[in-house]
Length: 131
Picture (tube, rainbow, N blue to C red):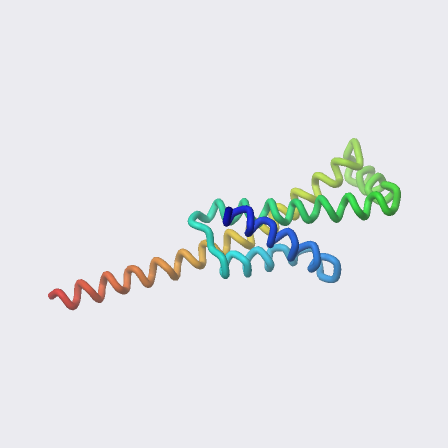
């Protein structure tokens, strides 16, 4: 349930942020959300933020692609030698997935690093007090 909540929170935050901010903002959003609401494993954090951003990018691509009748995505697909405009959408979604996932993974690793240091310090302090 927490995984789904983090994924949807990430998707909603990315949706509104991408309207006025650059393409890399899902990495920062995933980082912040993971620091505030960490999951147990780094891989789950990567997946939750990545899927949320991918959902957001997919929604934004479909909305903007419908608005301009697929003109831009067709031209970009030709530019990148892709067979269809849907491949351009898939590449965009993949880029959003990886960007947000790496931001979230960084935060999860940072959280784990500091959490483990506190556990080691208390164990070290207990060893000193028992001596």
